[in-house]
Length: 382
Image (cartoon, rainbow, N blue to C red; front, side, top):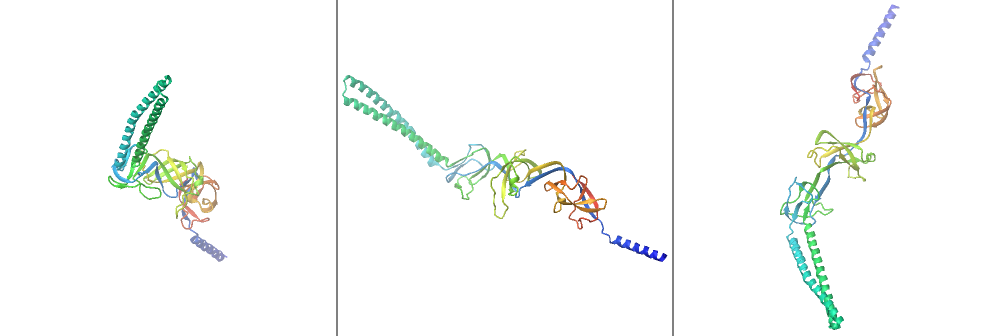
């Protein structure tokens, strides 16, 4: 009997040793504690956006010609109405001088001919009085009256000549305006195509001719970024946004949406997008933000304060997480009901409670529901 009991004991020990040696070893995992905090739902641009100027114009003369005056250089600040460039227009100036001379000449003729008309009308009036008293024949009176009418018509004609000459002066000034570029607003000269003495041509629509002068008003800037057409219906004017720029690393600029384009931009081999524009709430100091900088725009669609949340990276397919059970030392797959979400956090409406611990290190081998684990570290949810 003792031998039987000893044999049974030895078999039990052997079985226990076999199980102990063959048991699955706990997997070290990183855990995050479910907590409360802010969660934002947002959308971001699909391609890099850019810093744009509220006013930017690419100027070219209406007609071609040789550059006779270039009063600016790249980077200059200019005022509205300042002459930037003038083409050779000596011929037009000569025409303008001739037209002005014609105006002066016509005005002098008005004085002469209209004085004769006044005199003829007075003479006609005297002849009418003499005719009434019988001192002048009817033919003499008619001749005086005809002379007065003729002189008055000549006076009106030379007055019309003055008007015509003045119109000719205006025409020559308009022609000269075709050869002059004037700043339409205060701004900075970004680029100049052409040098003094070179020939420049206008840039008509549809022809890829570079403009003579690129003028930027950098006192007013905004952000323009392409958003995926799927996200565009969620975006509204006035929504809060955040702007980040490669040129200003680590800096986040608050902004608000000012415009959502009413059309879709289709670029070959690229996703269809909608341009969204945003104004900066607190623009950086002058010169810190340059037109043309690449920029990323994140539009905030919704915000939940002090809500239960988990890191979005901990979610499995089907809105599930791996919950650590300290009583068993194993992982349990737990389905949750999600609220709003972004790339960092996801709101939890049902399925978890504050203080629960879930797995962060999902990429480690063997991490799955039912696996025995040991907590390597715990990150508190914020």
